[in-house]
Image 1 (tube, rainbow, N blue to C red):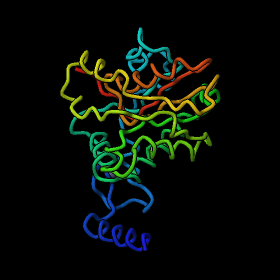
Image 2: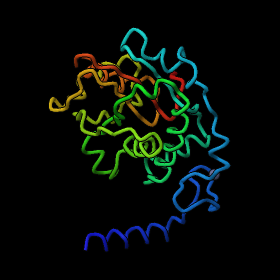
Image 3: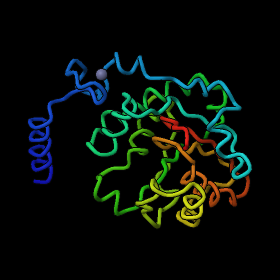
Length: 235
Ligand SMILES: [Zn+2]
């Protein structure tokens, strides 16, 4: 019964929103993809993957010790990247998130440090937001990376205890303060001496990733790295 309802819902969604590229709207793309090959090939790569000292790494300097930190593309307003971000967050384009993850997986395979990673960890969403959105876009990205890199995903590393809805409007310092104690770590996982790759869709100030990292860094021998889809320069 549930499957039937879900199938009807999917069919109705397809009727209202025909399958198209999240970025440019063309319907010339494989059914499993959310982004057409033209848009994917023309995304503005940062080149950070092969550059240890990069702006994403610098976001965390003096705050959180990371082994590696990177983002694949530049985020700019009114760009294909913004369209994709909007699609995967607000238009249920899990297909685009999964495809981005596969693409990130292929890029990560060129990084020698990928071999040191034990687990992929999607940045947790607050449960209320998870309920309204129906999925965690960072987890969808992780599923794509997992498909290519064959790395296990740990989705239960932490819980997010507040939604921090208004944080985009806040001053940078207020944002960092607001994020303290937002995550509570699951004490039942054997994370000692593991290397976690924290994954999110976009990084600006890094406040959420830092808040999670601050909780994780107390685990003996833990190593942390960060990989996001897009990087936006903070104002
Ligand atoms: Zn396109």
